[in-house]
Amino acid sequence: MSLPEITARIDAACDRAGRSPAEVALIAVSKVQPDARVEAVLDAGHRVFGENRVQEAQGKWPAWKERYDGVELHLLGPLQSNKARPAMELFDAIHSVDRLKLARRMADMAQELGRCPDLFLQINTGEEGQKAGVAPAEADDFIHEVRALDLPVKGLMCIPPVEETPSLHFALLAKIAARNGLSGLSMGMSADFEEAIALGATHVRVGSAIFGERVTG
Ligand SMILES: *Cc1c(COP(=O)(O)O)cnc(C)c1O
Image 1: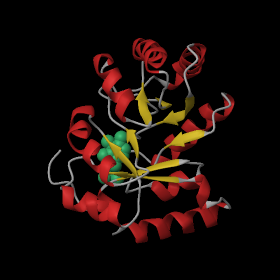
Image 2: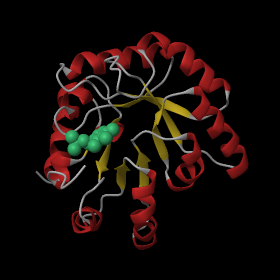
Image 3: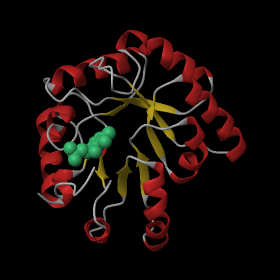
Image 4: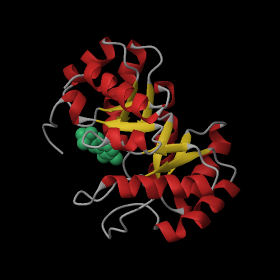
């Protein structure tokens, strides 16, 4: 796979769904990839990237942001409250807001920094014990509470359980977003981004299908 192939598949999926490709952002997930692979994608002109860990991103993205104009960075992995500040300084969007304590910390930081990344609230659609995100039954209250903090909530994010049909989870996420008047849907990865687009994804997070298998992690 390669970037042009993924872009072509996104375009085709949009076409089938009667949607415009302009509605779907491709986040190239560069976590633990060798620098040369990421630079090849930057050189090809792609600018929207995703990382899982604040510390890893801090180690590589400031230099690339210097070299390449218009980089847009998305944090996809779990965020500890004590990393809220560096995360908010480095990232343009954070997809893993999953508890009120973190949201409150972000609201304080937003005051201090005078800006805030776009936020996606993570919903644990599969209700998996080990996975981050709020349970679907608690989603409406959580969305309401985070919005009351005056934070820029763009939409919702989910990571379906590996052994289940992803479409059921995408449909559930879309339903929760719709009834809360949220338009952003961060869903779909290498194996299922076309299904996600069919169900309304606005942000697909594609790693290995662009860069190749991750060497570690
Ligand atoms: C790693 C990761 C991705 C990308 O996964 P691929 O299967 O390599 O496309 C997407 N979203 C999150 C939250 C991830 O951690």
